[in-house]
Image 1: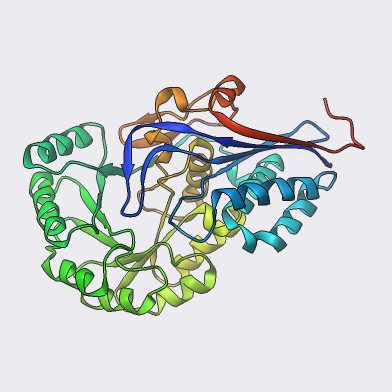
Image 2: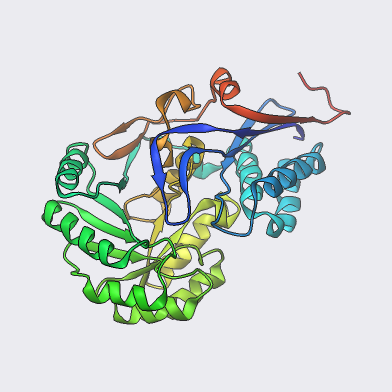
Length: 365
């Protein structure tokens, strides 16, 4: 079995509403998509998004890496290609994950096979600010079946404290809150925030300070009335081990794009559990294929509400799958035997650029 064709796509998929983070506001997602085909006609898809401002990787660098690797692994077996890309992955981890997961899907990875239907609870971003808008959004989210709400903070300490209290009052114990600072607070402001925080209904406080400032995050964890969850610093099993040694850190958040492959992600989730911590999984910037893959791994390795909800932020016409993943009652619904197929017309409509690479010595239909 040899790889005979790899096509790389750069997409632009508009969102239903803007998605605001402390460091960037998204009007659309611009992921990289990879299609791998082997000589026997088996196809695998991989998808990842490099977020501006989230790390050192750039979209241009990731795109260049993706196409370089595609050329280098043509004519190889998927197993050999996987090994080669793994040896180069530190150059562009997110892009490497896109092509590695396409190879895993092409190989028919067992963890993606769902003989029985399953569903997984997802959280939802919470955007409202004024009292009336907060009450209305709480009721709307609860009616849709959500039981975990994600509150973004980090821009204005006093306003953040006030808004969280108003949301807690409106929720009145009917849902769990996850509070995420996206690395935006200084050490002093993060400590002031947790000292003012009433823990009622709050599951965790996510990534208060810069990803590289482990000392500041540890200082916040030491005084927080709710468990701290580290996100951006968690990129390897060594990072998990380091987090486990910090008092007050109760959770690690993992994303497929940081661990390079489905198999490595599962191993990392199990390592979190082995330390007695809880793991949260999911990329709020992920599209349908990435979210489906993360859900498939989640069902094997964790028990927490998923954050693989990026696909729900897309406008319906911007979604790519011929059979979209159902969503009902606040849960992703994965039918028995589900295996994504991309609607090529929709893909073409949202494609900014594509590069097709085919092995010259192997016939490609």
